[in-house]
Length: 296
Image 1 (cartoon, rainbow, N blue to C red):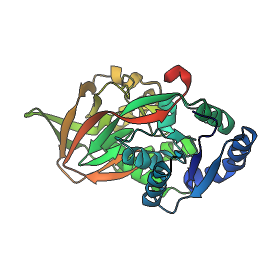
Image 2: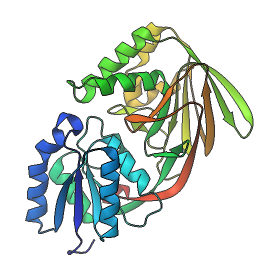
Image 3: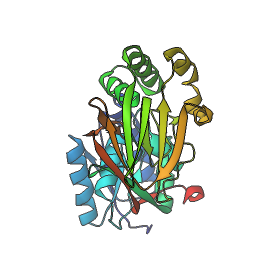
Image 4: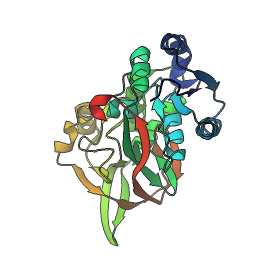
């Protein structure tokens, strides 16, 4: 990036339980020290954040999202097909897209990564026409996500552990139908996850083989098993070794329709996205993101 390039820092003041507000002085200090022109805009909603990002692009600025995965996903989806790159300063509870792209969570390091200006084009997922960057999931996962979002007092990893336990207590297996190229597959069990990035839930490596720039989505299914065995296997998700279990399947696709025997909300990037049935597809190389040189 040129020395005169201006940045629009789009900050969600409530992300990460207020973590973005705590990190802002360090971020502003680093930008000032590097004599970089920037302005700070505080969002009122996801829609407002998207409007701010689009306005920044119109004014020749690079939008930089300082928030969690929800706002990052919303802005990234809105910028799909736009040549201007966008930057991330992760400050949410999960920070899973940043984790997948190797972007530092320490604010000064994240600013230095931003100003180095290495870009990477990544794919964007779409569920019923709604864009996402991470993992679109339904079933047990979406129930746990809903519980985590309602738990305002917990931060980081503990909130996801709490949500998983709460969801497991009430869980009853669901029957899912997957449709690809006219062929139906039936799955009874816990979860259907359609992944662009491999991580979600604050570091769970749900789709360890997923690549954000391969033009494909990784489909992970978790079949029927007793709750005790499911609970014992849950820690494996953080290492990505759960895919070795015989109740887990994984394959790649460019488009899939997901149906279920009861209503489910599709969650992605930490927020509700759409309802089932859902057609989920990939838009290859749709988005330019500023990343570390090692992952560019």
